[in-house]
Amino acid sequence: MDNNGNNFEILIKQGVKIPCTDGVVIDPSARIGEGTVIYPCTIIKEGCVTGKNCVIGPGTVLYKTRVGDGSVLDSVHSEEAVIGSGVTAGPFVHIRPGSVIKDGVKLGNFVEIKNSEIGEKTAVSHLTYVGDSDVGRGVNFGCGTVTVNFNGKEKNRCKIGDNAFIGCNTNLIAPVEIGDRAYTAAGSTITDDVPPDSLAIARARQVVKAEWVKKKKPYRE
Image 1 (cartoon, rainbow, N blue to C red):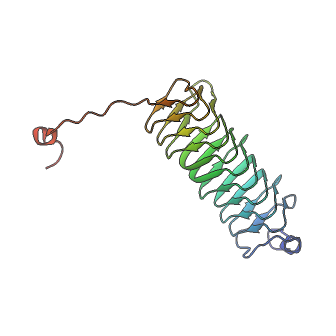
Image 2 (cartoon, one colour; image 1 turned 90 degrees about the vertical axis):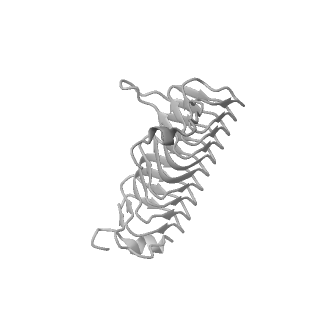
Image 3 (cartoon, rainbow, N blue to C red; image 1 turned 180 degrees about the horizontal axis):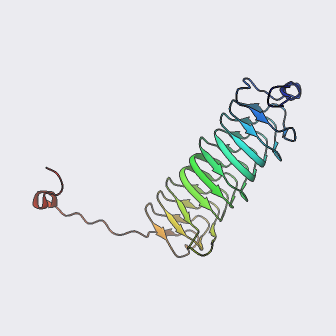
């Protein structure tokens, strides 16, 4: 028994791998599957169940979270959520209460998921917020996507169909529905539903003013 009250010897005998116990805290109620590796600075709080052959940490914090087999959680904070099998998440991912991350999902760096269901094999690769949304399988989120789900009075939901492609820097203004296999162009602010197999472009046209700098001489030489 270590100073934090964790019986690492018992876990190791059950097939859990803890190569370095520095900063590792595991609640006695937590269940951890055989073959799972726990890296330093990981805290597994009460109500957690982790499957077999996972990699948890470094720097991961789990609270009332279920994790399937073979998932990799690198610097992930998850509360009151369900994470499926074969999920890769991190580094620096926040999974907030009410979220269900299904099998094979990829959550990349600086991603936040809140009260949403993310379908199988969907990729949310980086710098994206998905809140109060129902996302299908095989969806690709471009960098910088935001679901705009709060209007100042109430939360609204977005629905994104299977195999949709959300272009970089897209704002989805809830409530809005993106159909199966639909695309949004990069830099779009989507306020209306997009039918299946369609492309939505919602951005101003570029205007180039030749020689403007020479005429105006703005701000600096």
